[in-house]
Length: 266
Image (tube, rainbow, N blue to C red; front, side):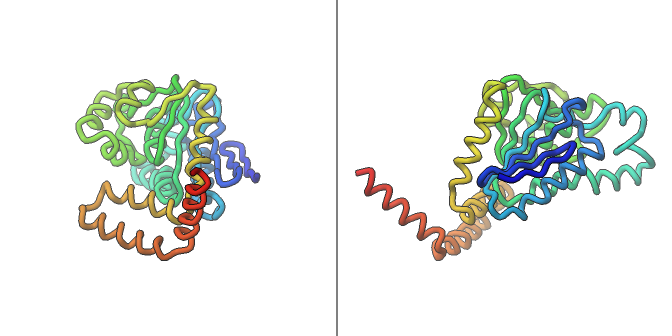
């Protein structure tokens, strides 16, 4: 077990599972410059840990992430300081680091969402491969309430997840959806009691981490790319990946283990 704590974000490796925890409960884990930098740093380091096969992204306190800091918006400080050009450049170099980092992680990423995930916090969960939530979770693409649009990629992720019409509705109404509504829409795949969320997220991560590592990385890439590919392109990619895996030791070892277990079960 190794850990790399900071004031705002802690990273902890147990076996093959890396848990990244946002720990600014007093702010609702709001994405100000300091939190954005600390979170991006942690996410950008994931691929360097070859032993890691799954990541859990979670938060301390009552809420997952309440998005941008409204007081900073009012005062024109922190991420919102300066001219239009300065704010745009800061968004590209800070918040968008998170988007690129999550999207570039080679192993599966599970978001364990407790409490509020609103605005950029909702978008942060959408970047992950799997989302679990607690019964008290609430989600909102809330930007229009503040006269804004999603600045961190939510429009891209949400549309691919729930379809154009529902994404448009959630965006234009800024409505909150609870855990059960999120489950029905496919925003989350499972809902747990608040006291069970972290444990269940870890159990799922451990199950995923049992898979052969190279095959798992390819499987994640194949599924994600399929949503943006033609059938011909998806088949071409699948054939290339399958050929690489079929000729590799990882596959052969997995087949031997499968046959051994099958004989033992008879």
